[in-house]
Image 1 (cartoon, helix red, strand yellow):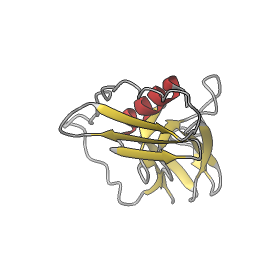
Image 2 (spheres, one colour):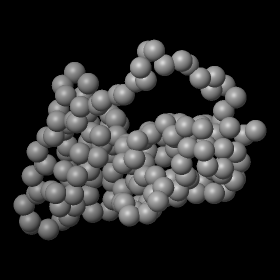
Image 3 (cartoon, rainbow, N blue to C red):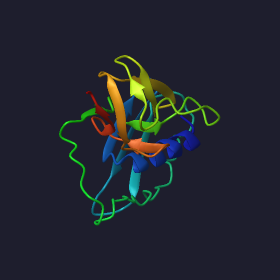
Image 4 (cartoon, helix red, strand yellow):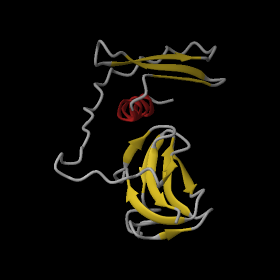
Length: 162
């Protein structure tokens, strides 16, 4: 891995909210940890080559991006969401509503979806994974902003199955 790729990995992990990631291949081993007491991310890179080339320097530590959470105004009436089904993220990654910036979103609020229909993309480690609805119904709410990091099992959409 190049130092720039390592830095991009550290930045991605900082934005995703993960505390620790370990990656090991036949060529290298990398461990990235974010300490809650110290808001610095640290990286340890160990090349697995037997050549006499000097070892790569660890990537400089990157401060995690501040997490901003947007909350609904307190004056807004609470909606009964118990009758809705959540479509959840099956993985950690970056949520995208469309296949590319020029395309229309896969689904919008008010659209009817069928089981097996693509509703979004979650990008993880440069792989774009189409996420399909497991239920049929009407999209009531989109819970994640476009190009935002998502966690495993995080709700993405609310669907009214009736």
